[in-house]
Length: 138
Image (spheres, rainbow, N blue to C red):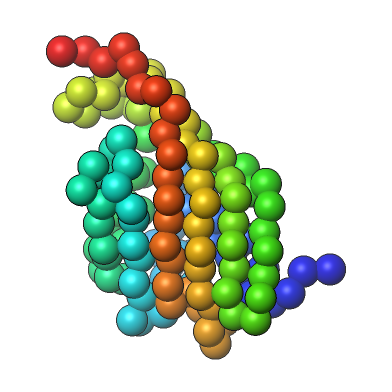
């Protein structure tokens, strides 16, 4: 049996992973004051902190860049309104984008901490560990 908090997080990862999902499916899962912290990684070397609008913009950008995407949620732990997730993300680049040629598969092992209040995600902190990327076109 899953908790309501866990259900929200699972639904969030399903919507994000589904390239056919819409912004109208994503927004109801996210708080107006959302804060997403992405720690430095191979794709975002400086890390990033995003609000709701920036997160939705990234959701749209991912759909334009990728031809395939999947999140395999391997473990979820809940403690009150806090959720820890262990997952594997896979994405296939659909169009040439900078150093990433179309067809390149990216794989990240993800550890994420989320806070759900009032049935919506208000914080998402992610630690994305990418498998070696390459060979890249120079």
